[in-house]
Image (tube, rainbow, N blue to C red; front, side):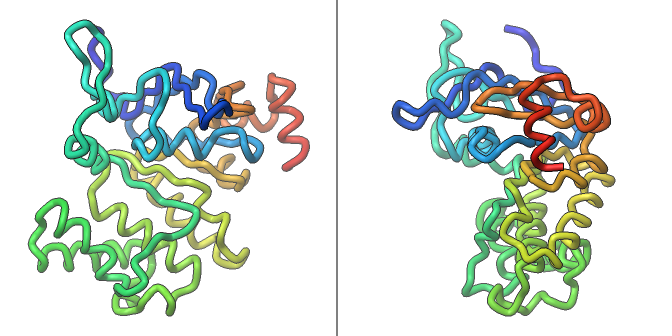
Length: 259
């Protein structure tokens, strides 16, 4: 068996995913290196969201393999090289390495911003409450919400809720962050504040995979832009290449519609 590359955080090899007869992912292969920001773009229905949900096993895959930090995600390798689904306990342990920020913020409505952030570190990682609170306050300051610790989600704007969701994901000290169209549910005036936090995370060296329709963010922040279309990875490269010299006709057609 080949040894995993130490700088590869996420490796997807020939990933297939179907819902019934509908084939969503048709053999996606992608590598994400430590500290890299990879932005996935493409038309709605191209498989972007499904793919990142497969990375942390929110969706099962029907073919191919996904590794996180060199370990098969959700599967154990048998002696004959075949894969068997891992235990839910081990899968949950692997998920700790991958933070996920969704379109909808998924905050607990009955908990304050601070309580939302400390819940998982205390319950999952066993962090002492005083340490978890100290870390949560630091994370709220990092996302520009130091004064909102005691506010409940209903008291926060959409952009503020999404920033709390980012802080909550960071509280688990993930190796990588996955963002699934994190600004699509926001009012236009709050989009920028969330993108700014994401930009600062990238500058701090966080490994990130981002599904977004924000082409300006992709141009400015991505190390690599990946184009999906109809469940296939059709093109990838530096932002300058993808946005100014796209090669694939379907990339050209998509960009002509959105730019």
